[in-house]
Length: 442
Image (tube, rainbow, N blue to C red; front, side, top):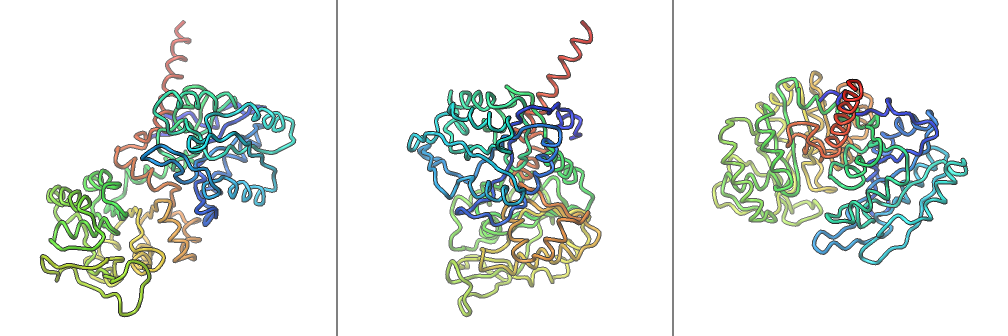
């Protein structure tokens, strides 16, 4: 998708404007920031707004404070933006104010209250440098399917003159990512633009194109896996996804793999018969007697090719790195021209060898473009191979997305414009162009 289809921040008049910026600073786990990459990646947009005379109000979601079953919202330190604000203040030497609102128990925040106007006055008068709203998912309207959605959207729009979306990883159609574009002049930030440009390297991948996808549940990745069967030259699976695939294809039993996962995997195995030799099976797997630590004598390696139908295994928690030494496996990875990775191969933090082996063989290919999904994929690369991670950040041969889920969603939809927030911006630009055409005729 060409960027000319998007309204870009470079086109906005930001001088003396209050700019509401949606970012994906969802990097807090249990109140701690483990990797600030997604925060740092938004600095270009923030500095640009400030350099053009704009005043910034930031917002992000953190975690999943809303219970999907009953809709209740839990507000706690674990999903607070406080660690993010502290990081920004220390990193950039600025003052940031977080407005406080009245919480209605399990309903969370029902509205943005009028006391935010005091913070906005302080922002305009240079008494503070930025405002950071509380976790957007603490507000009842953010994920609502009723009038609360539109009410929250209108309240957000009332805070600012301009809206900028720089949250590629936040692909859900929520009030702060989609609804807001109907009420304010809206633009794509620099990170959003960069992510979409690199996503085109997936859609127009140099071949052979190898995709590696892992996950803890088959149904969360199933649609993107079907899409990758069509798009990629080779598809490599890991995690519970791979375990379910093995159960379905070879008739083995692996502890912890649900019947639902196996049912999904069975359909996938049947569908994949249309694409012979496209799925690359890593032959060596690591079975553990216990779910957790890797204890000597409590785990063993199996060759998938030698397992008999009906074999019952305990927890399979990793791919053994021997897999990457098999000649046909090495050939797949080393001959690739594009490699996309959204995968942690082992159960973290104890089963690491499969992921280390994967990242190592990918790096040994000097000719491939290596595209890494965000989230756990990025975090584990940093934890297990910090030298490679640092090198990758500045290498033209690597790109690390801030949102692996967003990339998979785009692959599933066969276009970056298939992501709802991007589509909302495109539609807005199209409407603007129509109005300009009408005015020029009149």
